[in-house]
Image 1 (cartoon, rainbow, N blue to C red):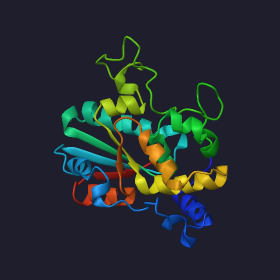
Image 2: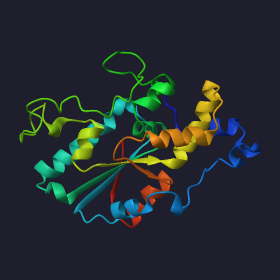
Image 3: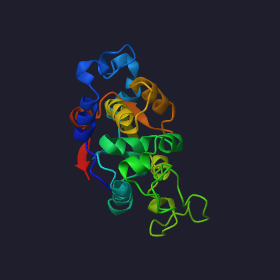
Image 4: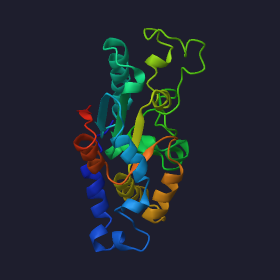
Length: 234
């Protein structure tokens, strides 16, 4: 997998000529204002009353390994340390390449995200034309709702975004990253759409339950400073 970083997104955007006017068109909205997004939902997340609150800062996809870390946090807190499930809140702050995990199969297929970010679909062994991190592969099994966390086929060992969200995890997407990524997509794929057309389309195909925040680096700061979330990056 390549190391497509936030810096490369920014440099790609610069190559598109943002300073020369691409970012100053009437459609462009590189910076969200407070009335542009669901800030009340974010405030509720910040001030969640859980005893243990943790924010994962995730930039690289790395085959979705961070999802296993999130699962381990939930299991360790609930079963290893005896913290009740309702007293645990985990927020996953995805920006950089990981931001694309917040968008559905339509986006992954149309824009060939797997080919772009070198993400391999474990079912086909080829570049993913769907988002392989969202759907559970265990939920249809008869053991899924079992209570033994040691069993591989239960919800407690499921690392899909779908299963983790059901356990209370809040996944977050970065609007700033999405804007930057739209501009890079235009450049690398020679697209004729405007950046804002792509951004609007992506927003319409956000994975269920995802909270799109104005800027992830700012969101993480508020979660730590005001929400007292502990911080981890993997």
